[in-house]
Length: 173
Image (cartoon, rainbow, N blue to C red; front, top):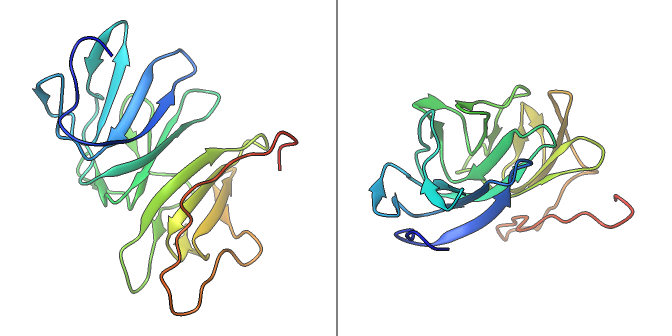
């Protein structure tokens, strides 16, 4: 991209419905401008930051709803100074997820993959065992502000298990 660079690694890219490119990672500056902490955007040939606050740590995944709500997941625990857990939404300012956050009792939660499904639900994968208070195993689905499990989730004995990526098949499954 012309017009600058980011100061470190970008983990994910997502286009908004209006065509703005958003990017996430472990960078602290965008095009030499501090304050981009972990999230930035590229619109009309110019790098920029997100208005409405910053997140407290790396952002590893992004996705958009059809209405333009940006969902961000990662290692962070706060957005715009408010406890959010590792998942937040942005519509011009950061907010928490209406159905509750994701957590990991006994460890640090991380959201590593997000997908907006054809069924108008948000899917999250990563390392966690609670989503909005519901017991889950590293993968969960939120629809109509309610989190649910996905047939027992993903488990793995004594090894640390994490869902790294989510994808939707052409038939919507």
